[in-house]
Each structure stands twice: as C-alpha cells, then as structure tokens.
Length: 69
Image (cartoon, rainbow, N blue to C red; front, top):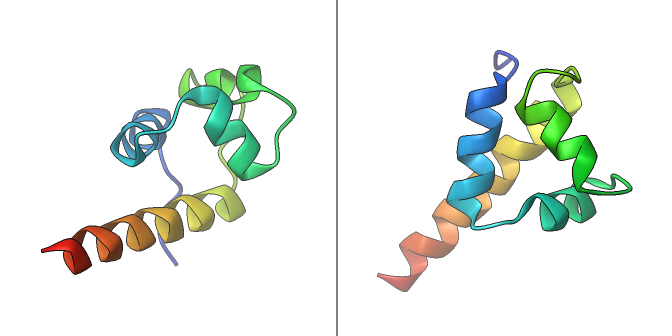
C-alpha cells in the first residue's frame, strides 16, 4: 500500500497532469475547485482512495507520454 499523499504531493501531481483545480475537482467527482484547494492546503484529509486515484492518473499520464516518444 502506498503512503497517503501529502498536500504538496497532491498539488504537484495535479500540476504535472496539467489540470486546473476545477478540472481536477470534476475528475475526482467533487462539486467544485474549493475541495481541491482544501486538499492542497491541508484543510481536508487526502484519503487512501484519492491517493490511489491520483497515482493511477499519473501512471496513465506517464504511459501516454512514453507512447509519444
């Protein structure tokens, strides 16, 4: 099991994916960008499920980048 992401790691992954807070909220099923801001600032806990989802999104992104080269 991977360790839970820190708020900083969460933000770094979102930015690496090239997603705005609003788009990340839509991707993760949140109502709006405020939830992502709360995750990134440590005001909302990052759950194991969110950590797994973020890691899968990053894997998919990396796979797509590798296929382009």
